[in-house]
Image (cartoon, rainbow, N blue to C red; front, side, top):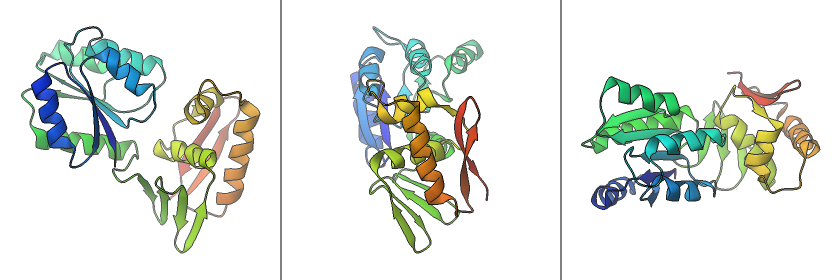
Length: 223
């Protein structure tokens, strides 16, 4: 189940949104951008729905902070500010979608699902590529009748790459996202895990892991 963070300072609207969305998603909430950043630091959020006009840290500043930290999760801005300039400012700071209040919850769900599909973060915690199914719940990769169970770090690394096909991840970004910025692991650790993944999945026709020399790595979907 995808993890959605609602950032809204209107208590009634925030509660209504949580009620309407929690049957489809795992929902957490924050009353302002400052609290939202505390939640996002834990790294357990798949998508953010945020208001703009909030105390402490507003929506624009929140999205700027998200992007400046290198977090690639989708963000939907939900606001009464509907001018062309407002929309341009929202997309300019890095939001992925923009929905005008009052909220049409059916449309909001459509937009959330579309963004989750684009980022390959499936609602049930799976990535499907042809005959390959990557299951977050048990750290397995299924290919027809073949099932490969991966150690946690290898799985998280593969899941990260396949969630954003063709996106290049630097070794530093991988260390941050998979091992955490406080880890003592280094680029050698990343190379070792990449080599292990290549060996395990070199016979797969659906995808491959590509090294971008001097930059990092990416997953390429082949069919």
